[in-house]
Image 1 (cartoon, rainbow, N blue to C red):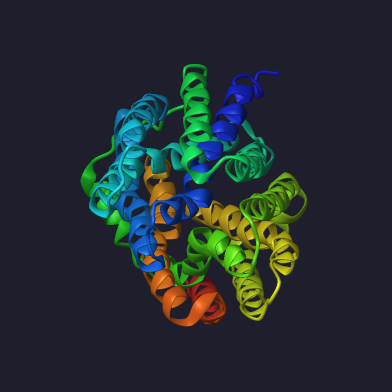
Image 2: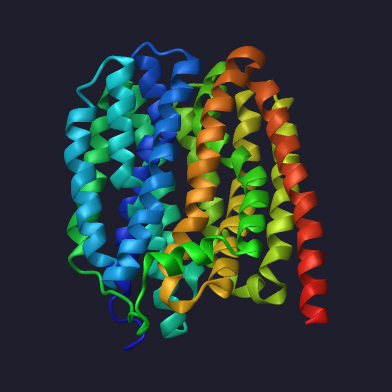
Length: 386
């Protein structure tokens, strides 16, 4: 019973924090199209969130380690995200939308990343399973994406502010009931964080991860537009996200059954290969219904990749820098890859169409998976000779 104390507020916080995020990630492109933006302009706008997270996530991760509290940082970030969004949804021209999209994600992006870091710290200290708690974030993502799609189809994309603010307010109220994990006793300095980030094995791993995650992030930005390019509607976009993220929740829920059987790098390589296959098949799809079927593989690819990557980072990160390490990974996965995916994806979609975009994403994922095989073999030989 002691191990479970404080877990329910964490699960419900993840549910609503990821719900708020899905509104922006899944439907902002449709909202921007409603505002009259082109695909290239939408690419620039969608790059603002990842660009902001490149700065925000390492900073807030370091501050939470330094202050030895994630709860206080979450209060700051979610409160500021709600306030900035009130201005953001009033903007109509490109430069102002870009500016406030950037500021919004300076505070919104760490809300889910730090929630995941708190989850990882909590389960490590209490001997629980990460996936059984993290799955509630996926369920929030799935349910809200479905309901938001129905709402926007019944009315219009301008109503995007309603589900976002509702979910963000619910998440903010739940932060007061969260419990911080037991802090590490060693002090944290900026020098420690920089030294960890420059370690050779960390740098190489994050570079290779970039090649796989760029496809995931480009798909986040342009899945909705691709479905509509193939003749689908907003509600179909919602169903696609719902199917994908429910399958993700199932993978997280069952993680205790499969995860400990192999090294995390094995699952990351498998995920990279599956990502490549998924993108190549999407590149030849000619009916939006096919996209719904392929979304089943979202849970397998993202679930394997995300859970295994954050677990691998936990293995190589010093205890006192856990939040910094977790957010460094998330910065690469969602931030740097998100910038490249949004900008490159917007250009590719406008020049080559959705099918051309997904073929290139398949090539990137395949390259990342192949190079990760060499990375893992080299790491294994290094450890054997040590």
